[in-house]
Image (cartoon, rainbow, N blue to C red):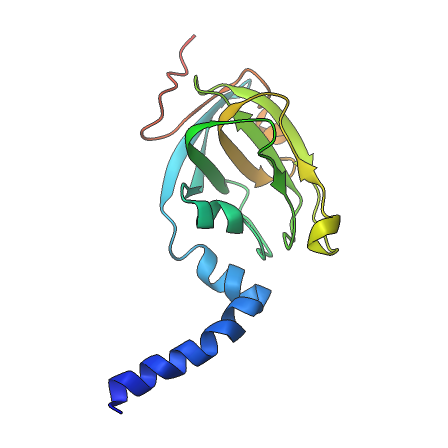
Length: 169
């Protein structure tokens, strides 16, 4: 057995430990491999810039902000989808340590609704799912209270690099 092969096999042996520990599986690896973009939320107080991680693949969306102990006031996560999502496709707070606000965003870049989500400390099956009232094309999670502090509400526009929303008018 070569040294390279031995290292490889050793790393495989440690993988179940790393991914069964919420801190290692979600906190240590969560932000390191995600793309970040600056988006603009156009609220009643004017435009506000947020630096957000982009979750545009199923594994990234499933992991979300699990295990995070803190989130900057001007940070968040943008969930992007290739096709519109129905009302059955919601969000939950299993292993999420921070209270979050979520904005469901339509194809035009406008916020359809904002909901507050509280951390769930129970078993996975006990965690409630937050579902939107209508189909959406993207979702934006930020620290609870951020949208209110920025004067952002339903009807306001969100734009990010590559988005189709114009945020004019």
